Image (cartoon, rainbow, N blue to C red; front, side):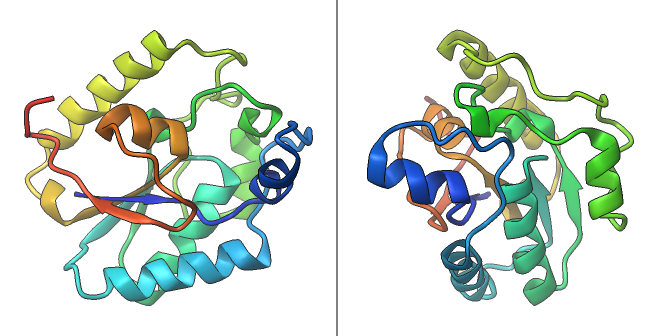
Length: 176
């Protein structure tokens, strides 16, 4: 599968300069983030992607939409690939708001408040990564799936730290 870290968000733009949480719940992409998503989409055009799995955070959904529109593939929402709940930006948008903003996507399987309390432990994140890994391996097309996710989730799953808009091929069947 291909892992794509979402494009730069308003949180990333501020935090990367100050290293202080700017207090922006569920931030959207910046113009630079939209550019990064478009660049990732150009890269993914040659990878045979059949579908996109996206985190329910705005920054991931916006990234997924940019990529999906270029590749003409569907998007499904998977809360297992969300960010580790640690900063204010990890407070999500309620399901009802997401459904209104993205009426063509299916959020019916999400709770209204789908994100956990802040300060999610590394152990909980690791368990979530294991659950996702097992679930994606049950899908026959996993090799042709692009997953739009986040820094901490991707780091936990792969051991690699990706920059905004960076793509990584990952084999969930490979031993840890």
